[in-house]
Image 1 (cartoon, one colour):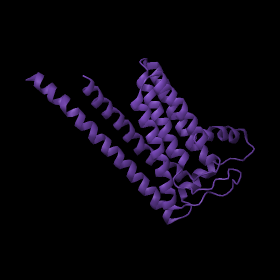
Image 2: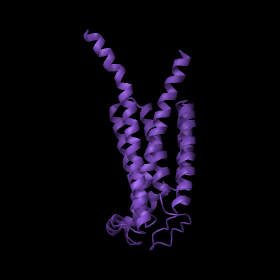
Image 3: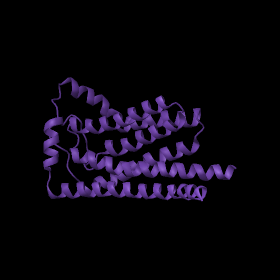
Image 4: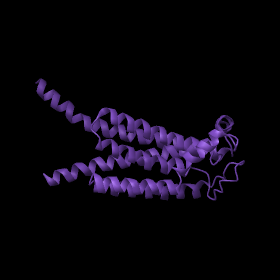
Length: 227
């Protein structure tokens, strides 16, 4: 009787996992929709005003210069560089062809989705910084959205290749910190409003969850076929 109960409880775990994924995605969708409604009601929300007063820095400060370097990693050049490095590692070192395909497809999808959302909401960029020469719209932040998908998925795929717990912690903490710093840099440099970054992270989080879910699901299917 006890053995049967253990088996049934194990069978319920996948269902709980799937429900958790759906709930998390739903929460992120709600956050994105709330932020989108907020920016439609007013050009600059109180939340934007408060956070910008804290984070926006003078162009000549040392911290500003540091964030100029950090924000490059979320730019088109930075993402392309990451793509090349990850493809080299996934294909050349780990022979993870599925991971490389999903990585490229999800980065491209995040770029496409970001462009569509920008055209849909057409929020103007913040004032103050004309040196960045950003030509597209502000909402959501592409650096936050695409950066979260690219660096988040890269972090997950690299975690899967490591066996030592210490290495996993280092990779995980480094990845999360880097993603947050890229998002913060967009506000510090006055390239985006804070709500742009939050919305980018919310939508990027949904895509990242779907990417990881798809990777695990397809990996199991291919392994079953091999066996």
